[in-house]
Amino acid sequence: MEKSLPLLMTTKIATSTLEQISSLRSLSPATLSAISECAETRLCEAGEVVVSHLDTSRDFYVIATGEVRAQMVAPNGRLLTYHLIPQGEMFGEIAAIDGEPRTASIVTEVECVLVRVSSECLLTLMANHPDFALAIVRNNLRTNRRLSQRLFEYHSYNVKGRVYSEILRLTDNALNSTAVITDRDLASRVGTTRENITRIHSELKKKNLIERRHSELRILDRTGIEQLLKNCEFS
Image 1 (tube, helix red, strand yellow):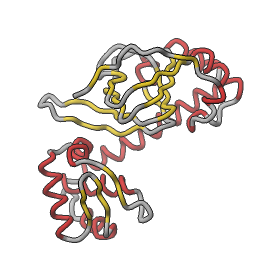
Image 2 (cartoon, rainbow, N blue to C red):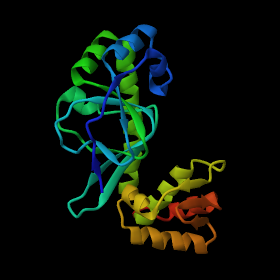
Image 3 (cartoon, rainbow, N blue to C red):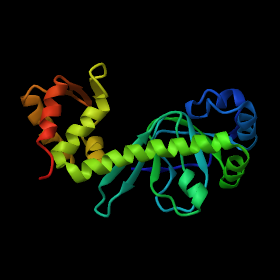
């Protein structure tokens, strides 16, 4: 069950800390100093809701440490995961800029330190520091690329194809063949049920394509899964 974000003490953040964050690393000293003047840090426990879908908050965030999940809950109660946002990336810029309700809920996966900037400060920073505005645009484009790929998969593949695609994406390449993920979590990412995931995993294990131990999934034959994926396109 999601836990609401409690009211926590916030603290200012030093420029030396900001320059260690990957998405801010290329910014000028003057820009980092300006961000430091108006930003605060916030410590969040795992499982806390930072923003809720359709709420009217306007704050913008950068993930200093940890990872968060962008998600929604369907009318039938099924959890739908858009994507996981890793350490160093940003979220909340859409509502902060356009003033409309939040497009998704953001929930912390692990304990996180978030850098929070108000909408008013964000707009001022973007107007006065073009390198910061460009960093936000680039972050948004990375998100759009990920979501565009998922949209393509929803329209191109059946459920099995979406599962195979997600497994391949989770493991990246032959050098990173293992991922830690539960059946429930994988189901939320591809828009299906946990029972379907369990059944598909069983089929892949029988073909000796994966190993599954508790929440650890290991690809044994990446090429074999890629071949199966070719047969999952809608006709």
